[in-house]
Image 1 (spheres, rainbow, N blue to C red):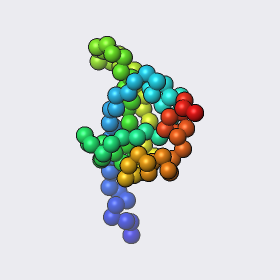
Image 2 (image 1 turned 60 degrees about the horizontal axis):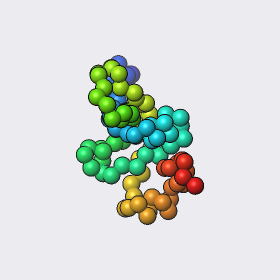
Image 3 (image 1 turned 45 degrees about the vertical axis):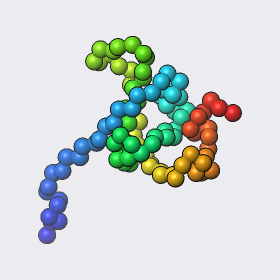
Image 4 (image 1 turned 60 degrees about the vertical axis):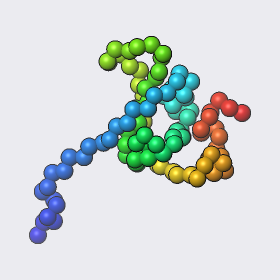
Length: 102
């Protein structure tokens, strides 16, 4: 006897969230140098979950027409919560957060 779910078609939707970033951060993310992105748990970012797609949008300081935006998409592979910045710095290598800092 077949499983009751075997013939059921389920369409999975991936949630996408746009995050505006500056030139340096955008370059580091798009080149794979910056692999950890820190965000405060506010403005809906507390709902970011594994599997979501983060769309990093380069902020040029100029008005961009729809379709002209420069973006980089990255899939969320992990979400970690810390009590504060000190806890982050105790657990995470600074080179993954700020790759160009000594």
